[in-house]
Image (cartoon, rainbow, N blue to C red; front, side):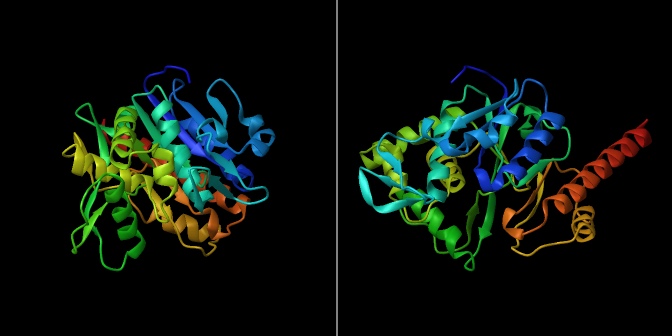
Length: 303
């Protein structure tokens, strides 16, 4: 992969999310500097669907480019088999996280921004948007993983096992999951090397064997528990997210978005919400215009 500094955007996707990814790509090209490239990773059979997005700032990758040779896809299923650990099979969600980790490690960038297909950028965004005093900021929210977040705790336990750490404390734990999520590729590379030393096998095989796994929990736990903490941290996401699996009207989306702070960079509305593409697009475009007007009014008042 080409050597390139600055910020890179990384999005794994597939055919069912093609329209969402197209909208995301338009927003990346519109709101981010011309030196930012959007790397979209899709299964081999979906390349023709995404090829229309290919341009000087958008790179389309085949998923196999980032999966180990021991991984092969089961025909007709969103599932892989890892030859090194045939059981359990690797679910699509886990394979997607392997792709994120491998791609982020290979990208020649100062920072990699993980952005899923169901997110759009809504404001000017560059590398400095994720820095404090020149240092890349990591999202960490201490105490946010309470007793009711059982899956989050399983993800943290999985991360600790991969990193050779003892069991997590019984109390509330730190959350590292955010949208969008920014990573330092150098840290990703050192983290994967650490996993291989601990587990005594290739990192993809070690992670693929996990029943419960979160790439963001692994990265955050590594930075906090192995490296001794990030250079800079924040407990506030630079986005608005809607994760419910229930549809909203354009008016409901607009009401939700306008009730939140206006210093956001992105909006995530879950693909599982079942919202019609035209409804979603109309509401998000309206919100981007609303934010632009708010920034203009704020700058005018400051003069």
